[in-house]
Amino acid sequence: MAEAYNNRGTALQGSQRLDDALASYDSAIALRPGYAEAYNNRGTTLQSLKRPKEAVQDYSRALKLAPDFPEAYQNRACSLYDLQRSEQALADFDTAIGLRPNYAEAYNNKAVCLLRMGRFAEGWPLYEWRRKRPEASAERVYAQPLWLGSEQISGKTVFIYWEQGLGDTVLFCRYAKLARECGARVILQVQRPLVRLLAQLGPGIEVIGPEQRPADFDYHCPLLSRHWHSAQMCRRFRRSSNRFRQMQDSAMSGLHACPRPGVREWESHGAVAPVSQTTTAARSISRHSACYCIHRRTGSASKRNCDQGITPP
Image (cartoon, one colour):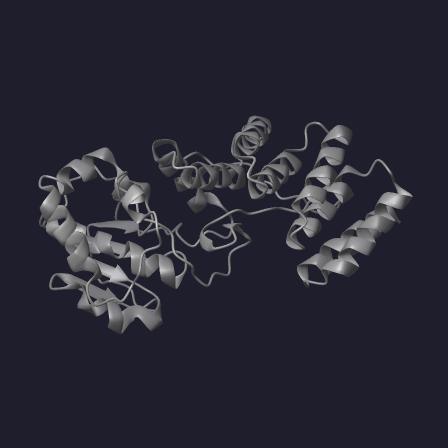
């Protein structure tokens, strides 16, 4: 019976009936006080209700009952980050990864945490794990190779494609301009509402909609790939700091995008600052920005999220 209440709570939570989900988890725990998964699931519901302190308590109870519960460590890390306890969050992400070495969700969320802490050299490589999550939009399979940042692209056609929200595409589209400056012909795939707007990026950059596929290209690369931030690319693009700034300004001219405060700090590391966006992803790592998303998982008795078999990027 406790399992039935827990599973009903998971279904109610998925339907955004969060108060009803809490009541169902309460019933499951009352019937089975040692039910670690119910505590974990109640924690994710409390987090959705913006009650992270209580969520941390439930995750801790789950871990006391089941010390080898990677989802609970991962979820507690997310709530700890929301409470601005970043170092503790990183420790929990590491524990989750230690228990499940191919835990894409935990790697992705650790990357988000590091990026928001300004630790870009550590965060960008780990952010490639976002492509290994089950709901990832950036994991595409083509006959052509993925561009890894080291291959010469002069005279080549590079297919760059969107992967998250409209705000991300507007801000990161500057990389199409940078690829063009390296001598590549660029095909940039964006969301339908942005096609006409981003057609202003300039000659040598073909902008297409999400339903279109390029007929031929040499390399492909998602728009938020870490390879745009590699040291080699930064050196290549920064032979002249003035020229680099002019390229960025040119790429964004006419797009009416206003970077958030702190953009200079991000750009000094070869990155860009996140902006608000509409997203269908899970809860964001920060209330004002959904560019990088923290994802939490529930684990019911009948179904547990598992990333077994995923290989590191």
